[in-house]
Structures are given as C-alpha cells and as structure tokens.
Amino acid sequence: MANRILTGAATAVAQVDTATPANVEIGDIFTLINTDDNAATASIAFTATATTVANVTAGLTAAWNASDKPLIRGITATDVTTHMTLTADVAGVSFVLTATAVNVGGGADTQTLTIVHTTANSGPADVLCTTNWNGGVVPSGTDAVYVQAGGGSMTYGLTGFTCSTLTTETGWGGTIGRFGNAGEYGGPLHKLQLASCDTLVIGGSGSLVAVDTGSTAGVAAYVVHTGLPSAVGRHVIYLEGDHLDLITIISGDVAIGTQPGDTPATNGTIIVKGGSLFLGVGFTPTAVALKIYDGTVTAECGTCTTIVIGSGGTFIEKSAGETSITIQDGGTLKGMAGSVAASPTYTAITCSGAATLDFREETRATTITALTINGGATTIYDPQSLITLPVPTMTHGGTLTIVR
Image 1 (cartoon, helix red, strand yellow):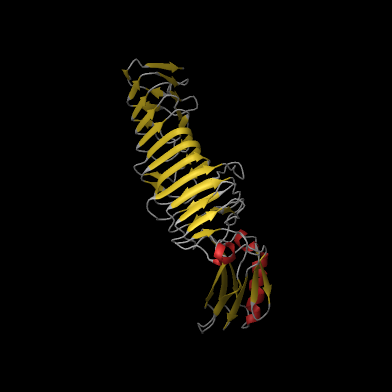
Image 2 (cartoon, rainbow, N blue to C red):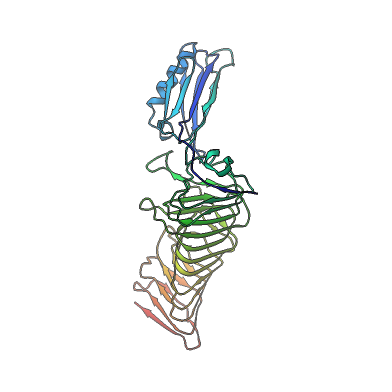
C-alpha cells in the first residue's frame, strides 16, 4: 500500500490511432466504433466498392468526418491511402476505438480492419497517465489516493482505475467525472469507476464529483464540500455503488440514484448534519436508517426503514410514504408531489418538542396510520384537507394544532 497524490503534471498530447484494412473484396463492410466510459457507442461503416485498401480508407474517412454523432465528431480522420489516422481534436481527451470487418460480397472471409494505438492520450486530467501521479505510478487497489489543494481534475481514463481510499482535500477546486458526449445536450454523466475503493472523503469546492464504487462491500463516504453545480438541474456530488453502507454529510449537494441506469443501494446508515441529499428513484434503501440532524433530504426512492428528523432537519417526501418517522424538536416533515403519483402512506409518525408536518405543497391524498405526540407542540399544515389522520396518542402534555 502506498499514498498516491494527484499532481496533474502530464503534458497534453492528442491521442492518435491508425485503422488499416486488408484483404478487401467488393461488398465487405468495414466499421469503426468509438466507446465511451459509460459503454455507449457510436459507429461509422463503409461498404467496399472496389478491391483496394485505398477505396476503404477513403470511404471510411469521408463518412467519419461527415458524421454529426457526438462520440465521432471530436475525432478527425485522415486518409493516408494505405491506412487512415484518427486524431483527438483536443489534446488530453481520450477515446477507445475498435473495429469490425464483415464478409458480405466476396468469397474469401479474410478481410480485416486493424486498430493500432499510435500515440497514447496524455493530459493533466487523465487518471491513467503515469505522469499525473507522484512517483510516476498510477494507483492500484491497495493505494490511498489524495487530491490536495491546487491538485488537478480526474476527467478521463475513468474506467480501469482502482484504489483503497479516495480523499479530496479542503481547498481543492477540481472536478471528478464529466458530463458530455453520447446524446448531447450536455451529455450523460460519466463517473470515476472505483472497483475496489471502500472509503471516500470528499472535500473541496469544485462543481462536480461523480464516483461509482461498484460492488465493493461496506463503502463509507464522508462529505464536507462547498461547491455549486455547473448548471441548473444538476447536483455537485453523485454517488453510485451497490453497498454505500455509511454516508455522512456535513456539507455539500449530494445526489444518489438520480441518473439513468443508476441502481445504488444502502444497507446501513445515512447521517445528514448539513447540506442537502437527493435520493432518486434509482436508489434502493435496503434496511436504511436515515438520520437528519440539520440540512435537507429529498426522497423519490423506496421506503427507508427508520427516519429521524432532528432540530434544523427537513425531510421532503416525494415518494409513496415511509414506515417509521421520528420528528424531534425543530424538525420538519414535508409532503410534496414528485415522481410518484400514488397517494403516500406514513405508517407511524412520532413527534416531540416543536415538530412540524408541512403538507402545504402536497397535492396527493395522504394517510397517516399512527401518530404519537410525546410532549411539545406539533403543528400540521394541511390547507387542502388532503390528510387522513388517526386519533393521535398524546403523552407528556403534548399538543396538536392543525392549520387549514
């Protein structure tokens, strides 16, 4: 195990690949395929109209450069007659090129289209570039990675990267991951994929930290971040993984399960002491204890096992309700229509101190099955009379006020 520090010292060099066809017959189909970090692909094909290599290189080059596909148009093709070259338009922006050659018109099934990586991508944001790390070594699965104040970004080479822990320190203003390509406008989110990382400590002030811990069990994430999103409708920190089992948020704008294809899961505890957390429809809260001591949590996901809302904490329910919610003095539960149209049901709500149940922005008929008030003054805002309430259980001089 070693400590690896991101330096971002690599010189930007444009990646160059060559594509060389061989054994061409009329009717053979030659295809070039570019694949991004999310396994999205875009391809260009040419069907040979003559039995020469130059016929294929000219046809593929013309088709490639004429394409408006986002994954294609950032790379320029050049016809050299014996082969073609494909060069990244921006130095430091990597691509992954593959090829196929299919026999259709001729009798011999020997046609090929060979890709050679002539010039490797290099740039300060490529995490697989050795010169971006102290000691000239890319981190491995047992290494601890540190991104210090003034350190660079981790934007390319997002797959095939492993470490034991990842820490972005206070004062760091870079980004991890990127939006872009595929369907564009803005493109999908590409996360840094950490197949073996079990601890995340996220500090700094950049506009994006997107991390996927994959199938690693027992992942712990600690967030103290101050960045703002790069555009309206986006978040700053995106977490993905099969076992995000301890998440502590002191500050920051965190989202889990909000992106297409996201299927993160938690079997543990989420503690929110500040900032905001958005739990999207892709998030699976398996036996989750959610504790909100300050800050705001918005849920469009399935049911958490238990929820505690402390002083200064707000829980916004946009889904189908919850099983067990405890609202302490100064805590607020908000019902608000979101992605789930079904009428929500809260199986059990227990209040103490000055607890608030705010349904002023709710548009769905809502049921509270059991309500317990253990002292203090609980207020329910229900101006549209949408809430079905039981007779509450009152202890220790608790009071209930319903505002309509």
